[in-house]
Amino acid sequence: VLLLCLASACTDVRTFEGTWQGPRVGSAAPLDVGVAGSANATLAIDKLDNHGISGRLSVDGLVLDAPYASVPGAEADALAGMTFDGSPSRVYLAFVDITDGGGEALALIALYDDKRVEVRVIRGGAQPLYGIFALARAENP
Image (tube, rainbow, N blue to C red):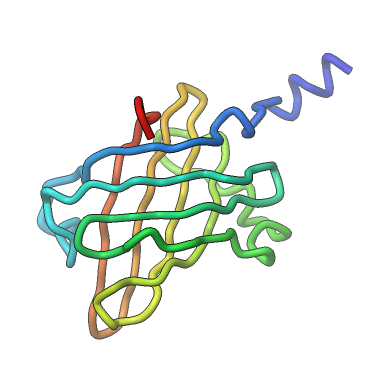
């Protein structure tokens, strides 16, 4: 059993449930797309397991306490195991309503073993968005 646990990276993602807050990061021009540099995000993780995530997301000037839930197809696909630089232990894909009338955006939610969360808000089209937020557990949610 121990070997199975070690082989599957045994991160209990449920420990990430709760409220996370943090600022937009990244000052390079290609990352400055439709999201104020001073924007902050608040991510409430209400339900979480290895098959999905749901809760509410707020981003200053963009998202107002919008519900989100991971895309079931992505969770059942190879996308469920995606990773990138920084090696997140788990990545979820969800969509959130944006208040600017330009439609939904993809919320890429990455959980890290060192108990931090990153959220990327991404939208293409006529009103593109790209914002990266580095979140820490909220002290008083």
